[in-house]
Structures are given as C-alpha cells and as structure tokens.
Image (cartoon, rainbow, N blue to C red; front, side):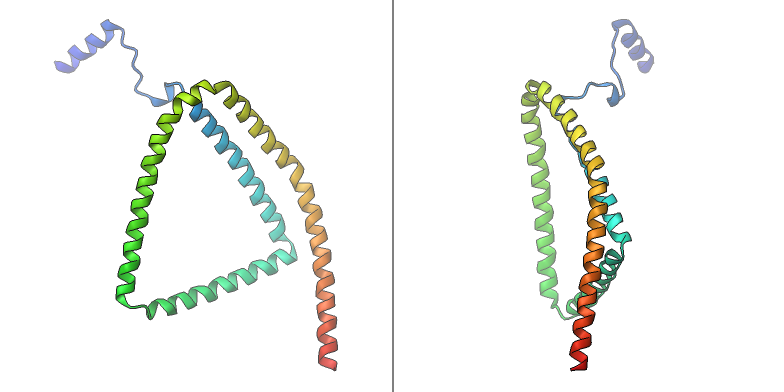
Length: 179
C-alpha cells in the first residue's frame, strides 16, 4: 500500500527523476577528462603499434630475448635473496606496504576534494575545454598518421646499422682470435 501511494504521489506531482546516471548531463571537467583519456588511448595505441613494429625486426627479437633472459635471472636472484632475509625485515616491509596503502587512500581523498573544488572553474572554462579536447583528438590523429612511416624508416636504418655493427664485431673477434 505504501509503494502504491508513493507511485501515485510521483505520478501526480510530475516527478521527472531518472534512475539512470547516464541521463544526467556531464560536467565540463568530466568532458575534459574523457577527452584526455581518449587522447591517451590513441597515443598508447600508437606506442603499442610502434613497439610491435620494432619487435618484428631481428634486432627487436634479439633485444626481447635478452630482456626475457635478464628477467629470469633477476627473478631467480630475488627468490634466493628473499630466502636469506630475516623475518623482522619481512615484517618491516609489510609495514611499509601498509604505509603506502594509507598514502594511496589519502591521495585519493585529496584528489576527490580537489576535483570538487575545480568543478566551478571548469564550468567557467567550458569553451576552452571543448577547444582543447578537439585539439587533443586532432593532434593524436595527426601523430597516428605521421609516426608509422617514420618508424618504418627508423626500423630500416636500425636494421642496417645493426648489420654493420655485427659485421665489425665479427671482424674484430676474428682478428682477435687469429692474433
């Protein structure tokens, strides 16, 4: 009965409340944040594409193999070192971890307060934020269009240079072993 009376009250008073957050207008600060995150996604995608191109080269594959080998050596050494660390040190390290967690919570609270304080400023700067958002997206698209050919040329030059260095190194080793 209470629910029915509440529904009747809502219908007759013309309440236009929306239960969905998506129907609410976004603030200019949120618009700027979303534009920046879109820009960041485009730049990160471009960087991943460049890394993929570099890893496809012979030099990139050699570097990747060396990094993996180095990572395995470091992991093995860290496990060995951890076996020899006293329990007190582990306890202190746990305390540092809790301290870092507390710092993260404090930073999160500060960020939330700062965002609330910056909302009015963002509202006043809405025309600028819209222009900046458009320019960020355009700049990211321009970078995405310009960078791949440059990276391809760089990969070619690095490949030639690495072949020259390899040849010089082989010559040096050959001369050194024959003398």
